[in-house]
Length: 394
Image (cartoon, rainbow, N blue to C red; front, top):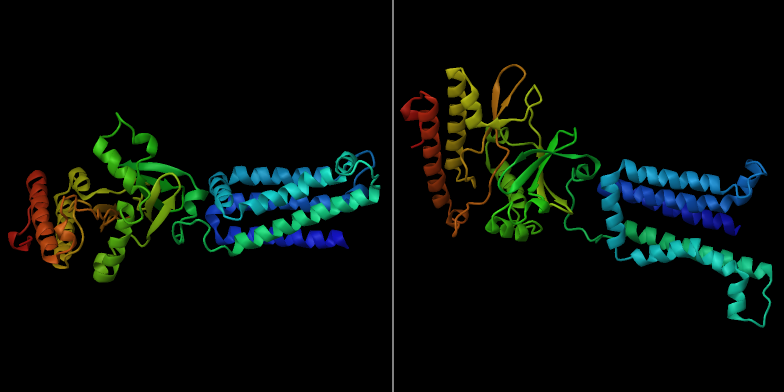
């Protein structure tokens, strides 16, 4: 009877691990690996069953299914390497982690100690404890361990803190289930393609690239204090600006913005932004409007891109949008040969000592108008684009 109570306790613990893995896909590998460890512990309770199932020549037949369960745990950790690392880190950093440690000790090491004759002789040398007493002590020790594991599993499942920095975005788990392939690099941030998911992510440059000799001291200092600051991180601010613009802009401007733009967190890179990845029909990444105009041979195509940029800038100026770089537009080529303008980099920082435009809409409108005029004039003069003067920004 006690064996079945212990098995029910372990199955409940395993169920808690499965539910936690479903709730937190970014920890899935680590939690499922731990779940298979619990399976191995549960299989140890069916010693009599394995003795009847396997040949008598095998001295300890229960070690075979236990070994298979442990092998599955290792395989799970290898196949989900990224989410395994994050999952183990979440388990270790959880405030109830000592319960898990004590539970594992009470089901593995302590039962053997409780059953050993020398242990009881050390406690009371003058008394000879029978085999039944030592067996009962061993079972009681294991039962206590199972209760501790169940207690930890339930508390981990219902724990609202989990040492999380934020409410995870719906797609953050993709960071831990797919490789991050570098696709673009700026002076401060690196863009990554998230496997074949159709998304990309931008973070500050990796810590190994923010070293003396590789980066200016001022930029290193800026990245260091911004990387893990939710409010000062430029990627985090970019998501905020994206949300403001999605609600304030007309439909045709929203169509130029990525459908998905979410704040995400990486334990190494800090805060970042996850966006829809735009690719041309040939699989190449979209390029900036300036580069697309430069590589176009058709004058009409150049003028088309130019007018799209001009119209979008006019709308952003009219609405005093928090947009500081007129050149941050990219051109997406469609399979039918048409082109669309996309906004994938919002650059929320004004890069001025006193950011007055962050608070005054009139000042923000004036600065963006001045930058837009200069940018459009450069495009016209460098690439010979012919447009009607009266349609330009006033």
